[in-house]
Amino acid sequence: MPIIVSEIRILPGEPKEKAFEKALSVLGVKSSETKEISLSKISVDARKKDRVNLVCSVAVTVDGEEKIYKKAKSKNVVLRKIAPSDIPVLKKAPEARPLIIGFGPAGIFAGLYLARAGACPIILERGAKVEERTATVENYWKGGVLNERANVQFGEGGAGTFSDGKLTTRINDPRCDFIIREFEKHGAPKEILSKAKPHIGTDMLRTVVKNIREEIISLGGEVRFLSKAEDIVVKNGKIVSVVTEGTEITAENVIIAAGHSARDTFAMLKEKGVLMEAKPFSVGVRIEHLQSDINRAQYGDFAENPALWAAEYQLSQHVGERCAYTFCMCPGGYVVPSADREEAIVTNGMSCFARDGKNANSALVCSVSAEDFGGDPFKAMAFQHDIEKKAFEMGGMKAPAQTVGAFLNGGSSKFGKVEPTYARGVADKNLSELFPEEITSVLKTGLLAMDRKLHGFADPEAVLTGPETRTSSPVRIVRNSETLEAIGVEGLYPCAEGAGYAGGIMSAAADGIRCAEKVLEKLMK
Image (cartoon, rainbow, N blue to C red; front, side):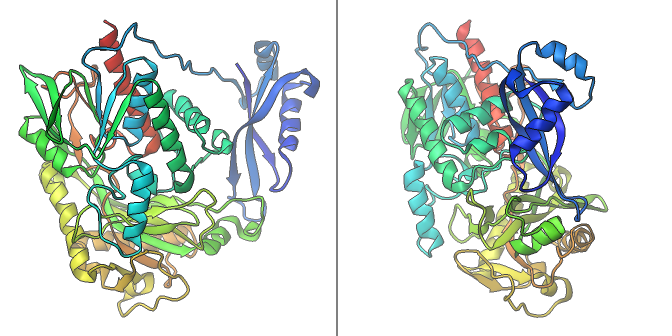
């Protein structure tokens, strides 16, 4: 049980050993007395531009930790209990093996958990394995034909495979420690264990996903790619099987982790009487700046200090009953084509681990509520689709884009200082025509307000590319708060982002484990 000493400050460029010395001084412990010492967390404090610091938490393992902890008498010293990672193991695999629909973060970690428990799960993924998917997606980005079965939205790893691989989350769940450790164990950089805002990067995430898949298979699990769940069979209020590619698989426990873009799966579940409701989500654009400008705005005179990493931001502004905010910020990243059907434009952001691209980008979006659609999730999905279709009609194969100056003040866009990174090219179009006037107004007001918080955010030469419509699922599949089963369908576990219970890699993975735990409890009886 290590002692964590937080709020240890060092200058950019100073070695981590400097933080270790300060932590040991707080504890009154000599270096020779420690069993282990390491960085538990590190972040940048750039609130004072002339005095940027690295803020560290240091983990110290030493004999007599409770006595040392009490003697320190500091609010910055705590004992950290390590969450147990033991998984109960079945005596034998069940005859009706648990089935998981979707192999994004939730499906991956549900599969890993159940495989380690000896349950030999069957996983159905409508898209391709990551190796094939990557080649298909890159071909599409270069101007090739869209593959509706292997694209940014569908395939091994989920939509997050082509993102920044962020592992930040607002949830306080002990499962997050387990998830971070498993990512590192399967090939993610070791620094994710200590960074306050860890990320894997799309390039490394692909390898990590593949490695976890291989462990699941080695433990008796099965992953079937290009296997869409076409139907579920429910009898007497219980799920009894799943139909995929014309084959019916007996299944008494089904975790459905289909992701936020599985509109046809939601329609199938509706036909089966599964209870759903609309939930809030957001729509907007991707905004791009030079990363060097973001570094300067955040770090001031320290902007070019090699000890600091590419700067990030997170901004929001309430405008009446709505909110404009930034989401999924990708330092040194790219705006990527993310459609999953023909004649539609969808954008997303992506960074590699190094985050060394010329531009920074993030979603700049406006909130919409369930009430906007009368509580009907299918009207909400239709709203998303209509924007994506309209964007295609505006730009054809290219995404509609506009400089911030043109968006705010009218006129044509002159792309120059900030070159759009959208791989299939952009077309200078009036983005005010893409969204309802109320949303456009909120985005404009938000832009100007955010510029007062982050100097240069409303730079006239910054680039807006649209649309960003897949921030989260507009659907919540209602489930029992105790058993996590769908209301009215025993054995069906709606899970993670697509079902409306997560938002990002970490929270989705945690919800996948949570559902797997419920399945295992049932199997252990």
